[in-house]
Length: 107
Image 1 (cartoon, rainbow, N blue to C red):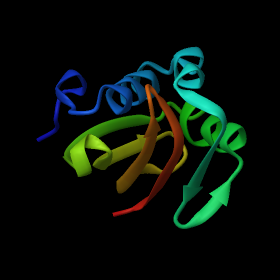
Image 2 (image 1 turned 135 degrees about the vertical axis):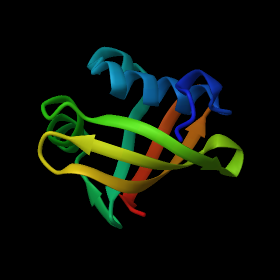
Image 3 (image 1 turned 60 degrees about the horizontal axis):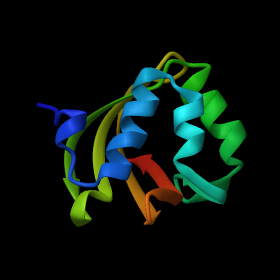
Image 4 (image 1 turned 180 degrees about the vertical axis):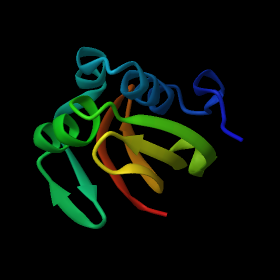
């Protein structure tokens, strides 16, 4: 069973999930700090290249299964047109109302 996006504890993380699921790149980009970074399975990636490939050009979608760390850690059933569906973990570093870093990987 998934958690509705509007019921997620952290409003910035909730907005991130909503932007991903709406394929709204402008809203997504507006949530990131200048110089925001990310990692996938422990390796730092270029955030613009990775999000274009793994989210926006491949219809990425997050179904949140659970949250931890005050809403900054998520376990997600993630799917896109490239890889299909997989269970992933996400962790967010939030500064004010922006995300300065997120890390994802298989759960």
